[in-house]
Length: 61
Ligand SMILES: [Zn+2]
Image 1 (tube, rainbow, N blue to C red):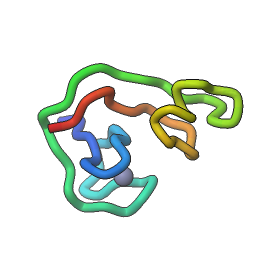
Image 2: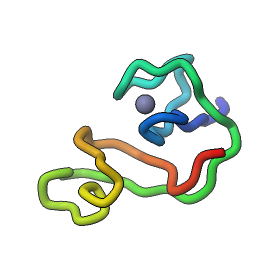
Image 3: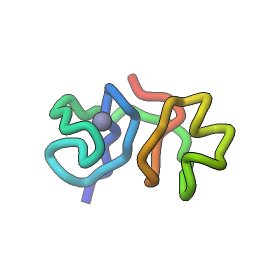
Image 4: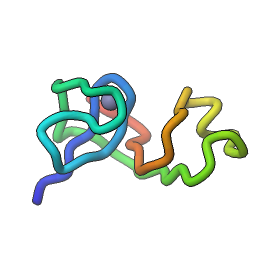
C-alpha cells in the first residue's frame, strides 16, 4: 500500500484522508519519518505543532 502524507499536518497514512485532521489533500511526495509517541514530552512534536501521536513526514511537497 502506498503511504501518503497529509499536506496540512504531515501525518503519514495509507487511508484516503488524514486520520489526524481529516484533510483529504494527501501527497505522495514526502521525505523523512518522525515517530511521535508522546507529543507532550517531545520537543520535535512541539516544533512541528503535533498534538496526536503517530508517524509524520519531515517534508511534504
Ligand atoms: Zn492532517
